[in-house]
Length: 115
Length: 118
Image (cartoon, rainbow over the protein chains, first blue to last red):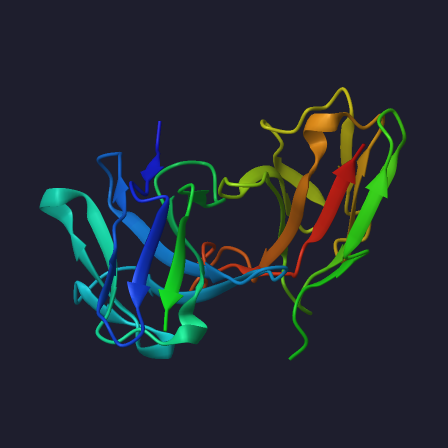
């Protein structure tokens, strides 16, 4: 069965510091990969997506992510974090070769930003 | 274009009562999803519609949950009777659906309905 693991439940970084949020997925087929951000009381906003091609993808708000097939990973990065980046981040995966079309989400990583 | 609309935004009920949530997807989006997000977890699919037909309801607790999308546009999710463990945020999402040049995973989410069962 497909699954997504976000090993870090909670991360705290200082404003201006770099950020990396980890995401690993299981399943052998080629996945579609996503990162979403959720601010308190808000819905999910898509940060970036990977479908095929260049394994380094750029998203909104200065975020990027790199797909590494050999490591089954899709880690999210940002070179300099802003206080407004404090939120919950979800990695999600979808697979075209299954009958389902819904996304499978990780359990999320809560990001706190210290001034 | 307008985003996915959901109402109400918040609802508090007692256990064993019933509740209904409404979702209006982005205009023209054929596929609609309901997800349940329990506090501290990622969203989990409850049901997927393609137009007015159910594609996947394997994870819907059918003894108490029901959903419909009669005209293939807006949708209603109902819980009857509610249990304490149903406290969660219920998210609705939509996509343009399958077919050429359409990626069914590019989903757009509404703001959610936060349900508290006491």
